[in-house]
Every structure is written in structure tokens, then in C-alpha cells.
Length: 393
View 1 (cartoon, rainbow, N blue to C red):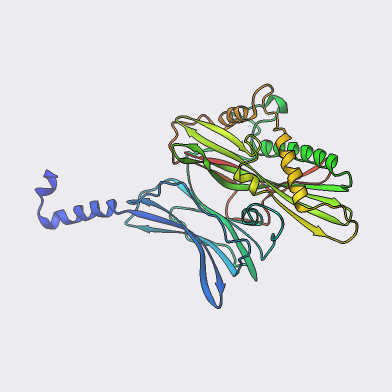
View 2: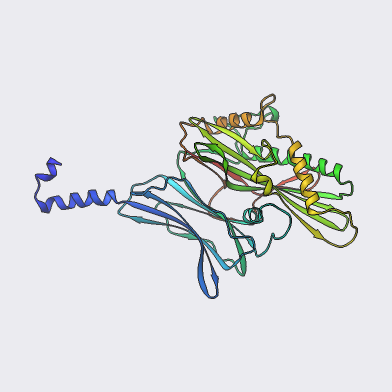
């Protein structure tokens, strides 16, 4: 300051202005979903992350989605960055993920939460930007569409990551249960899918001998949270899957959707992991309420089956469903945290503002579906998409 005061006013002004502009440096990242109603452009949601003079502490911003019965025409999705006063390079990438589906794709049925499943299942638009990039957008969808959940995330260059596939190297954590298989997101999702499909199919066939066939799928959910689980009044955060089964019986079929959430609680420099609802009391959890069953009648035999009966039986199956064995003799949650740290490195001190994101591998593309795995006939499991897991710490 003494050096600045010794200069004449004409010499001091550029320096002072430079200091002021640097202090006011700002970038604003916006994930936007819009559509048309009555010849007017309507904003469905606009998520923002700010960096610089004003910092958004939360690493992920979330829109839960429209009510399941709502739709909008010419749905358009875009991601943009606005810069002011020459901000510094933050060395991070911004992700915008947005679910959409045809109008009334999932309606009716029996569930305790009519909006959750319709807002997580469908097409996923995935857009990414780095600082200095121009706006990116997806082509507007023709006709009426439902705007589901969306997430805007800030991913730093040094965030711990577990990719879809790890084959060798320092981050190869070998699983004894999988012989020479390195732990990665492909392994975790496949083991979970196989375990759920086998357990639920066996249980449902025991309860309903008339079942002709069951088709299985596993969808991914980029980010979940649970307000009733956590520390210091902070909700647990994590990623999720939705297990889908189509149960075919004479004259009808039942489509079922079961959320499975991996919830992380930050405890100083380590996580506590809970798999909801498989590791919780399933009678009072919000995830149980989200289980969805829809009957499609084709005419024919009456088996006295209802959506509620199928749903109740599924809840019973979940209570008895095993979790995959990752490390023999070690509890699943403890083994999973060990494997994750082996693949991604150990976390440093964790703040309450940590977050988790499960994102499609690659960048800037549309996924026709969020399906990761599909089994149409017994023993034939097919991969559909790939995802990477980010620890936003």
C-alpha cells in the first residue's frame, strides 16, 4: 500500500482497478431446461453454480423433476458459462445431466411416491463444459415430453474417480471373489444386478408358480440423498440404481421398479456407507415408498394378482435379499469402502459439503436409456451403458 500511495493518481488508478476487477472476478455456470407452452418459452428449471467472488459451496445442484402427470412441448436442454472480469482458471469441468421421457410414459400403478420413478427413468442428456467453452445444447425434442430430474455438478481435476473399467495399474484393487477382476463400476453394478435378479426371481417364482418369465434390467441414478440419514444435520449423499423386472404371467404382466441407493455419510476423514433399503429397516424408509408396480392387462386368466400383492411380495423379497460378496468374510459395506479406496485412493479430510456423482463415461451425448445391464433370457446378461463414479470432495 505504501508503494501505491507514492504514485500519482493517474498511475494508481489502473492498479486499483485491476485489484478491484480481480476481486470481482466471477463465472456462472447454468444448466437450463426449457420448453414451449401456448406459444411461449417456459423455463422448467435453471440450475446455477457460481465461482469466484461468490462461491456456490454445494458441488451438485438438483432439480427433482416435474410432477409425473406434467409435460412440455419442444423440450430443450443446454449448458452455458458466463465469465466476468477475467476470472482465474479453476481447473474443473461442469456436468449437466437431464432426464426426459415421453409424455405419460410411467403413470398409474401402485407406489407411495408417484413422482420418483418417472423422474429417474428415460433418456439422459449429458452435457459438459470447461471454463472458456461456448454454450452446448441438445436438439429440442419433438412433441410433448416429461422433464425428469436433472443435476448440475462441478467436477475438479483432482477429484477421486472410479471409472467403468480398470484392467491394471496402481488403482487395480483385486477382488478375491472375482479372481483376477479389478474392482470398478462395471464389476460393482454387474455383481449387484446378478445378485438382485437371482434372488428376486427365485423368491417371486416360489410365491407365484404361474410366472412364465421375468425380464431384468438395472438403471443408474446419478445422484441421491436421504434427509433422515447423516451427521450434523447434513443428509447422506450418494448414487443409486433402479432394479426393473417385468414379470409375465398368463394374460398380463407386472412392471416393477425398485430403487437401491448407496448413501455416504462423511465422518472426518472416512465414509460410513449405507445401502438403502437392503441394510435398513425396510418398514419405515422413504425408498420403500418409492417402489413402483404397474400391471398391464392383455386379457385372459384371472390369477387374483394385484399390484399391491406383487409390491408386498417384493418388499418381503428385499428383506431377504443378499448383497454381493466382494471380499469373503467382510461385511459388504466395509468391503465396498475398502475396494473404493483401493481403486480411487484414500480420501483426505472430508467436509460436510462433499458430494457424489455417477456420470456417463465420455462427454456431450444423449443416452437413449439409463440402463446399465439387461437380462432378457436366463443366463444372458447384456451391457447397455457405462458410468464413472466421482467423489466430489
